[in-house]
Length: 499
Image (cartoon, rainbow, N blue to C red):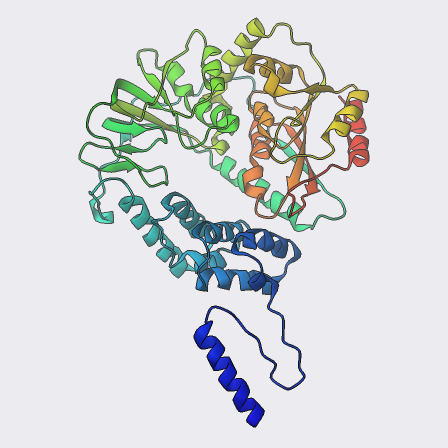
């Protein structure tokens, strides 16, 4: 009893003078102190990496411990958001909500709003969905740089249906849907294949709906580089799911009579060539509309290269300098499933394929090409150089698209009967390839990344290609990955013999 009383007083003193330190004392004389769990011992900045390991191993105790630590103790805002993002990627949206529910969204409203949207889509809990929607609305309409706010009942009038719409024109390339094969081996959990199969079926359902692409027009509006749109009185018409940082309504600003909005926060080749470019197809059927295509300030040279290949129908373009005031602004609406209705978009890519030989007449035809990523510092394949050597021995042409013009890339894919490539932007050219192409995509596969990385399989489905997805495991710490070259060669030798 005396010893217990002394221990109790000692613990009370420690908690009084060092309340932030967790001190574990033995309950009985001679018992060794229990060591704190790893998720309590690591530095805050290491929590996202530890969580990745726990998620890969299915360590529920550590996952819950990290979630509670981020929700109940003070960790850096960026760490908490990083942990919540990983949880959402692994379909643990309710756990992510525990972390961000009481978070100060003023510190990083852009990332916070993105998290809210992902949680709203992923949760099955209607109460969480409603709370996330309410907070998202607050974030989007408070962090605007404007004092004006409006309620759900006081929203501004949307745009109107344009008299110019997409035109369906007969084409020989209206093909059957593509096919998908998924291959994986030891060391990769079977759910990787299951998730990809479900994504393929989901895309089939979307394609079956045959939604038509449409065009909306807004009058007397301001737009910025992210594709956000507002009126002079402060009404927000399009927020692009992000807070508006600066709602300019006073000069100086650029002015355009008739504009076509073709920008958002992304700058990658895929988003341009497979999303924004087909969205401009309706303009080819509106010769009387003298419009300027608005690009973001982050636009890349390949966008201008592409417009050059639309000759003689090349529209003029403008890189948005902060903000542009438009008397009329046309906004096209398409999605990847609508590409299956190729008759709306064929003319755009026909022009590109017709004009490319004029610039890239020197490109030699090869039945099989490999689109290399050895010059990229993202998703690095550790044995890519060895793979290229083995592929060359099979007669496969190695292509480094970063050293080729857009016209040269288009030509190389047009000649090919088979395209082999690690997951990357080079596979965007599947959209302009002739239907029936054999595609072998080498995929670093991680739980939480499937939906984002399934975009090229969706292109193959919409365009009628035969897509093989070769899944390989990713190291959760280094993020490195390799390809089982010997097994891959067996597959490729068979496919090449059938070309």
